[in-house]
Amino acid sequence: MALLKRLFYEEDGQSMVEYGLIIALVAVVVIVALTTMGGRLSALFGKVNAELPEE
Image (cartoon, rainbow, N blue to C red; front, side):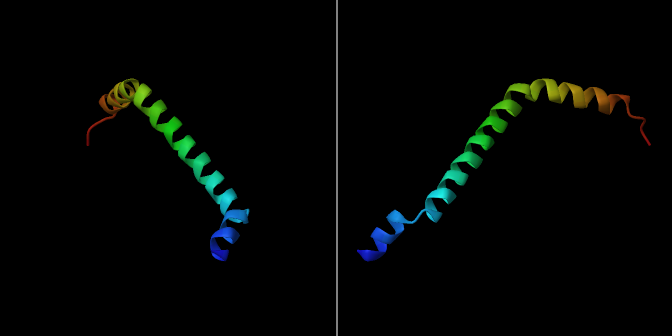
């Protein structure tokens, strides 16, 4: 029981959870941005690939 109380009141674990939530939020934003721009990026890379000389 004392271990649970100590874990509840320690601030180190709370800051790690906050960092984890921030990283998760950034990951969601990146995934949404790439999904939204996916078609345009694919077209752009296809155009660049078509312009490159073949060896």
